[in-house]
Structure formats: structure tokens, C-alpha cells
Image (cartoon, rainbow, N blue to C red; front, side):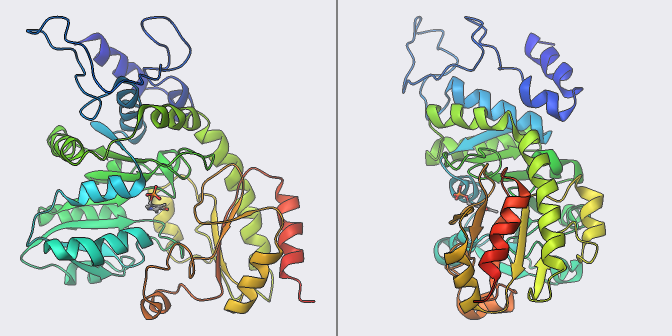
Length: 392
Ligand SMILES: *Cc1c(COP(=O)(O)O)cnc(C)c1O
């Protein structure tokens, strides 16, 4: 066993919070520096032409990016990790595991950008997709075609936080030799490690909770097996969708505080959800931690927490826009998962790429707002939202 493997085994026994800080590359081996050096280099010198350096060109491999890739693989419990220029770069590179003529079954309330990729880009390459309500395993099964090659999950889904039974979908998918892919952006490996449920590839928009500061755009993928890892490596290198060294470093810096941020935000999110749920002027509240959330039991069987995103319906598009204009603390913006709270309007923001009738059918109503709870005092956030909701 190499030193590296001994190290990896030792790290695997540590608790999550400890692994976030002690992931293997936290100390620079050459100098003892307290963070991974930023190897701002595109290429690497061959000292001896018969003995090439470990990394020879930064698209194919860069030590800073490699440290991040090993870090996310460790956190998700997978064989190999990959870092990309954005979440969509990770998702699109992964979908190119498929070939022309292949079919994929996709959760119907998939992230808007993934919907766009499937319906405007991959369809032109003759990669076919069927969108189903994945809370219902029968619908997943019914979508099977002779050319089906993969199942794509997102749980809790965006923005209505619907829950997919990951182990059940994986078990069925395995029996048909389908590749299983899961977008774990909302939960992060702190709350949910889908590889443990049988998922083959875990994806992240690391722009969100993993980065955590609204200052980095990045995507990550983790392969369950070495064989899948080999295919993802070929695609990442062949497509050139890699993350740059500076961004890799920033992402690692953010990830070190993942548990502290998530745990704090979750306590606040639960308070916000309960407060909203008790109001008679809010037509619906979506949060997996609410007792009345459909799928709560399944969620609890596969996740250790409920996350920091609460969606709620204020009744109408007009009211939603008034609230967005009146709040003073949250960022009114696309995105989520940051130290500051972010209030989004899915109908006009993240899900604008979805046709209005499709949106309506999926419960993304004109009155729906999505609150990503940050690290501010929850008392202040609630007072602010209360004044924004007040009718003058
Ligand atoms: C933001 C997001 C993406 C896309 O990631 P980018 O980093 O914006 O490219 C994918 N999936 C989910 C669930 C997201 O929230």
C-alpha cells in the first residue's frame, strides 16, 4: 500500500467535520504551507524526457485542481472526483457519457439549466429524455425504453423540494444496467452521500453550498467506481471543461467551513419554515423538515438533515414581486447556498428557461419564492420578511 493509500484509509475513519479540514492535501508537502499552493501554470517541464512529470498540461491535470478533486471524492465516499468550470460544465460533461440514440429518464423538476441542456442541446445530438415525477417509482419504471441508458435524479428537487427514494431508484436501475446520476447540490455530502445509496455519479453545482460565498462558479463530479472515473476523466480532458487553479483554491477554502455553515443555516431554515407555515397568508411552504412535507420519511432515511432552502407560495405573482422589492436583507438574486441569504423568484429566474405551462404543471407557480437561508440572525431575517409581506 502506498503512503497515499494509508493516508486515505486513515482519513476515511474520521468524522465529517474533521475530514473537511484534514483531507490529505491540507498541508503542502514541499514547504509545510498551511494551504494547497495555487499552481498557476498551464504546462509542466519534462526534466527527463523518458520520465514525464506527474502532471504535464493543466487541462489534463493540475496539482491544485487535483487536491480539490481528491477532497470531494473523499467527502462523497467515491473513487474519483472531478472539478469543472461550473455546475453545468459538470452536468453537460457527465451527460456525454451517453451517445446518440440513447435515452435518459430525468426527474421532472430538474434544475432549469439541466432542462435546457436536455431539451435544446442534447436532443439535437439525438439523446432523448423523458421527464417523470420521481416521487413515484412506478412512473420511473414506466418510462423505460429499449434504448434507456441512465436515470438522472435531484433530491430534494428545485424549487419544490420533492423527495426521490434514491435507494429504490438505484436498485431498479441496476437491474436494468442503467447508469444512475444524482445532482446533490441542495444537500451537499454533509447531509447526503448518494454513493452510499448506490448512485454511480454524484454531481454538484459547487457554486452554491460547497463554495458558500457567492464568489466562485464551479462544478464537481464524483464517480463511484474506477471504471466510471476513467470515462469521466476522458470526457473532462477531451471537452476541456476543467476548473482553473485559482477557482479550485477558492472552492477548497469555502469547503472547509461547509459543516459549520450548513448546520447554522439549517437551524435558521427550520425556524423560517415553521414561521411561514403558521401564517394564513402563505398558501404553501416547502421544506423537507416540516412534519407535513410529503416524502419526509424517505428523505430522513437517506439524509441526515433538511438543508437551508425553504420555498413558499405567497399567493400571486404580484405579491411575490412586491415582496422581492421590499425585502432589505436577502440578496434578491439567482443562486443559493451562500453565507448571505438569497431570495429567488424561480418563475423569472432559475426556471425561466421552462415553458410557462410546464412550469405550472410542476408546481412552480407565479407566487413561489425560494429562500436560501444564510448566516444572518434569523430574528432579523424574519422581521424583514414580515415587513415585506405586510400589505399596505
Ligand atoms: C445552480 C445549479 C446548477 C447549475 O450550476 P452552475 O454552477 O450555475 O452552472 C445545477 N443544479 C442545481 C441544483 C443548481 O442549483
